[in-house]
Image (tube, rainbow, N blue to C red; front, side):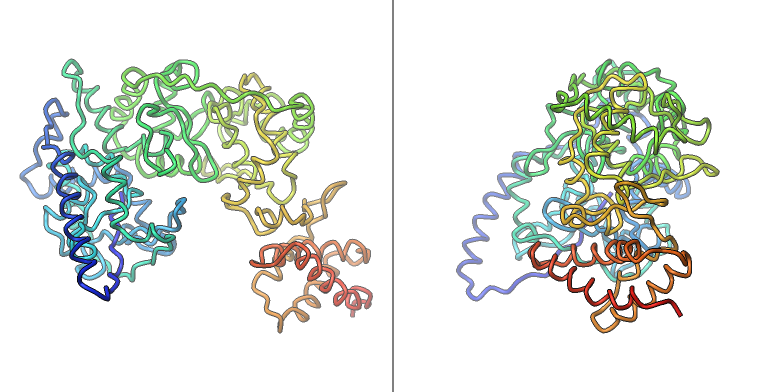
Length: 552
């Protein structure tokens, strides 16, 4: 959940443009509200959502449960921030958007918000006050009010009661970095008119209480469609393709519609419940990345019976979305053959020759729907960035962004998607890998700029296509260097490399220096490739006397 703070108001030189804009805004905004702000009709909602507990402790307990089901904390807890104090910057197509403090601090949080203020934020996507004096303070739809609008008022008030029961924390807001004109909130009026409809979730009157609960958890609280539904160019959900799967960061939220071939309709319900509540299994694999956080902080924290209801709703009540993978790339057989070699050298030791994994610590690739999703993004993203350990005592998956080329990563993706018993298509390309390097969490040597510039690949032992990593993070030696500190950094780096390998050749030492310095120059903004090459050659010329000198 995200309640986004307004930006400062610019000053107008004349009142006339403001008056004209005000009249237009009032007419258009009034029309929009009268047309789309429908009355709350929660008929057929789950019984528990229709009335708030009268006992304060019970109300807070209900709110705590709802807050977990809505997965509010992760989005409102940035690096080095206390829970719910905001500071998480979300990368959007329109720039960076920081989540705000939603503790009850009266200055930097929502401590002064009334019940109506909070309800309007969650239900209508508007914060207290106005923008440009006349516009409501529209919230950016990264806060999923497009789904939360389906919550009952009783449940919204329970969430507020829980948040206000927590200690208020004062913390300076993290600034947004949205591009113009998207940093002007009134722009959202047009988006809202086109894409936002406030109002309830319309339940099928024939549903039993469990199905209603599953629908409510999926559509409103869990806001599953916000990640699993494709979006248009203006980042609005394409509701006709609900749950058909969609890119998210460097991964792909797969099809979770009731389709039996491409969605979750063909899963055993026990496998889907295990995925949501128990962190997956050795049949369908494990949640990871953003979905791993959802499971850790939300679906594993609610009763297992709720996850059964979610599974039942997804598998039986959502519209099937038969979205097959895109066709094979050209020369797919060659790519798959290369992928088999890459898999044997880098993956089989943990995931097994047949992709069965290593129970109970390393998940399976065989039969894993995340691997065989319509897009190859999940495999590429995992190979680029690595993954956290699945189980507490298991190993993390290492990242290969610095050791494998784009062609190799595409090839191993194609191999695991079309072998090991999997029947997707070999549709990953080197261009797909390069594009994901721009948004994946990878070290500088493995990012888009370094890869495009041609920086060398590095592996622990080196090889025909890679440089041997000297270890101890020595290749990061130039990460924060300045022109004044560069010579000393180079002397220190050479000495440290030689201390670990006293017989290293001048050529290998030169390669290590290139691997260390190349990402620094590759990621310099505003330089042409020619200028970057010239800077790299100049660096090597300056380093040669140090390389030639004998170690003291």
